[in-house]
View 1: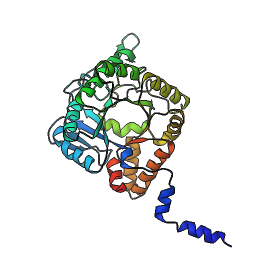
View 2: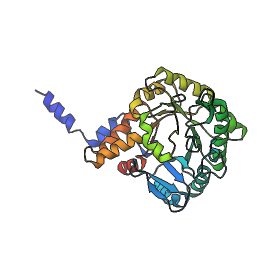
View 3: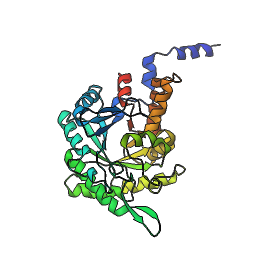
View 4: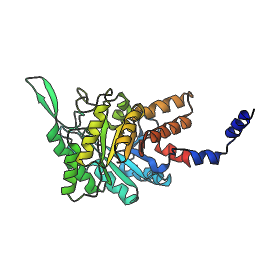
Length: 329
């Protein structure tokens, strides 16, 4: 007869006690907020498939950064949308490129805010692929060349570090990219700049809204030759082990929501910080359902973030970061 009474007492357990025994907690210190910067003046253009996320011109960046800092967020992930593209993505490694200029401005405004620079070429190439493309007329086939791509990615990473980026985050998935970038950074005197490697990046359908945001959809073919098959888990461990051996300082899993088993596998195998990227479609689906009144957005997002932490993530890249910072307050 005492069990219902005990159970009742458990149900009336104080909020403070529940917090005390909670195994996983999300804080603003776990979050990294992506920002899309572009050329022009007075540009604050909402991305159609990502409500609340904007393309921002450099002159409007200060307002955004002040809001980020006021919310207590510690880090941003910077993406650039250039006004000109070419076959080799030369604006990616231009010292006066959009990411480099935005980085300098952000570090002048908020020196303590960590700037994570996305290091890839797809936003900057006219073909939308993450490297140098060679077209073989005889075979009527286009191939992405690994080694020439590494040279350009290394130049991009060094130019981003020179501009003041605190962390380099290469997202290209080319073979040997961590080693090449680590070597390039060290030779340029940036031994202290860590690499947040997109170690496990799947060829996912969850990237659709991002490609609108970054204007980076491939103009032909797809990226399955250098991104991972969603069916493969053991391959993820091989990719991560390779990046660790090459000098990665942090390991990322992208996307996060459908790959929590991979996050857990990396957490069990490596002592390095694990990063979960809560990608664009994961964001957009929740926003769309919330706008229809079908779900409680705050509850869904908070539960998802706890899930990432429980799976083993130390950091979470998410477009919900500003919303979360307000809710967590």
